[in-house]
Image 1 (spheres, helix red, strand yellow):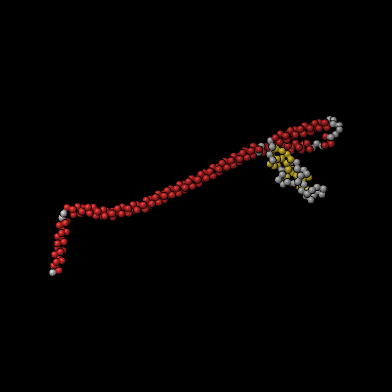
Image 2 (cartoon, helix red, strand yellow):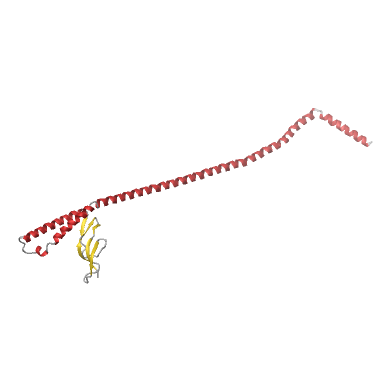
Length: 239
């Protein structure tokens, strides 16, 4: 009996709910509730949009890092190119300085060679001329001093003195002319023996003279612009 009453009550309640859902007010409430459900279902979409922005930020950082790496590479390449250009500049500067130095050395060498050619152009002529100068010197040496210093100079003695004076003047003028062209005569008597300028023809001991001293000049020497043209033939003391 109790069970039958409970069954009847549940059936009555179900019929009431069915009738109430068919009324206009119930339909309106259902329509209002539907957008709320759509809003609730849209929330996950918004959360997915924020997650997409979060994913874009690492991509942006990666692009900036790539751009920075490219900039660093370009800067490194520019530095290397600048270093290469600097090396080239130094190499060309060194070549230029070497060329200038070589050109100046060539100028100096050419100038010296021209000066030597000019100074020693008469070398062959001077060698042939010194023999004539020697003969003139021998002719003057053959005149005795006592005849030149005699108080009375008559006849042939006066002619000899006049000839001697003429030869002496000629020799003096000739030596001055040769000196203008760089040719000089030297007499090493009393000097130390120098193998570069003297030729020892004989040696002899002499107690009153210092060892290795020139005491006799057999033939005078000549120099052309400071260079020995002919060595003097001398006798040397050998104690």
